[in-house]
Image (tube, rainbow, N blue to C red; front, top):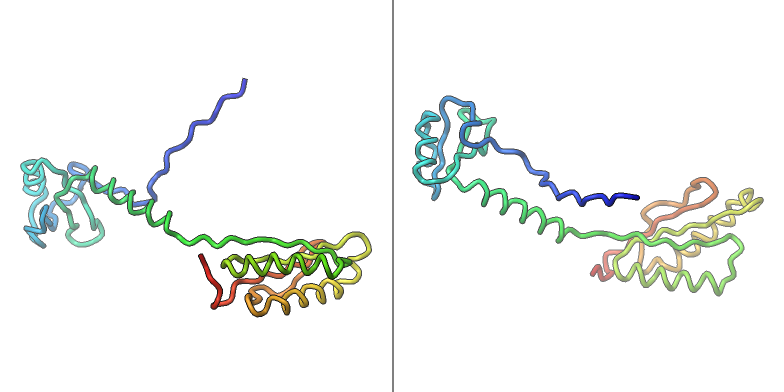
Length: 187
């Protein structure tokens, strides 16, 4: 019987911070909870005592500076806030989708117009469109037919899109990439 794989938790791509006893420096630059003790250089033991008195953690935030900068804070809350911000940033990241239309060198004008209409809709929505002409058999001997077809599609869509990648052969296909022009609605 096949076992189900467990979902792995999303790990934060953030840097691991040294806390409390993991900090190796003898003297540190201390930043307090509310910003007090700002830029005060103290021995590590005094900084640890201050953090323990406040019932918080001592976190090394800038290990490469001389002396290292440490901050008195709630480490769990700090990591939670940081991962939440990263998750929000990932969610709000703009994803550009690439759609593909596949044509044949012998395509009828009517069918070509249907594909052009669909590509126009995608470009108006802000998506990229890959135009692909697939050659079969001996059609590969006449790549100029495919190039003319792709150039015709590009001319028809020139008002809503721009060529991002010129037509090029990739195996048995000729491919061109169109991107939305600046005036299109990218929602």
